[in-house]
Length: 317
Image 1: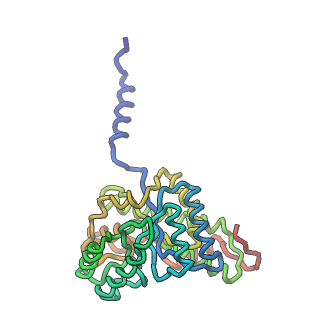
Image 2: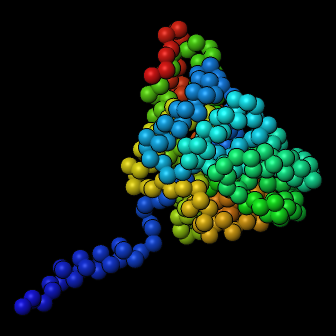
Image 3: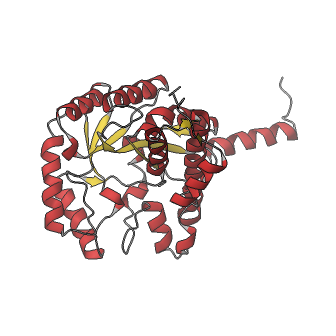
């Protein structure tokens, strides 16, 4: 006959039950999205090479899916072929407009004409998802424009392809491309470390801001760009995210989070949904942007880490 459970056993059982039924506290979930595809080649690598490297890295790291928000003005022959390679690999496409113009600077009618032009092109491809991401994360010049654009985009089948984690990955990329153009030696390991470190800090920052604002950690959407830095370093980033106990999920799953229905009042800033929601709930403007979302900060960080040096021996590892 089994004896009565000890007090220690009962405590362990209670902890186990609490662990099973308590909502996520520590382990987060995040999806990867890439803006501006297909971007042109650079001094570091050509467009075709970048596409192949991104596909290989995402597959090697078993990323379940990513969403490429495409800018259709870049769809020349090579660009179309690259986009087809992404969809052939099982990844998905969303709209990032045709001309990549700010909705804050052009009228609603002009913006929607551009969005419809992009949709007509994107619809020719397989593996599309009904999400539109505003260039620069500019949703409109005022509240009326924001609401009108969201309503008009819904009419043509698009929901907002918002982000929850903003960052300056594009500027990290511009620094390494400029260094390559200047024939500088690039310490690729140090550059990768900065990329991973800065992006992980951004993830932690916006997750904490979400907990402060929403009292929970949502399914996050990370903003990246289809650039050389991503092709070179996203594998290391994925590994680091998982090492912190987080899970990489598909964009489809991320966009099912209730935050997708929370359109912030007022003008949406170009930092994503969590920052805008935080502002709407009274968080000070100085508290909704991570320090690394600044060009001078990143330039100084690269200088401190001695990522670049002057001679002509630079080679990509």
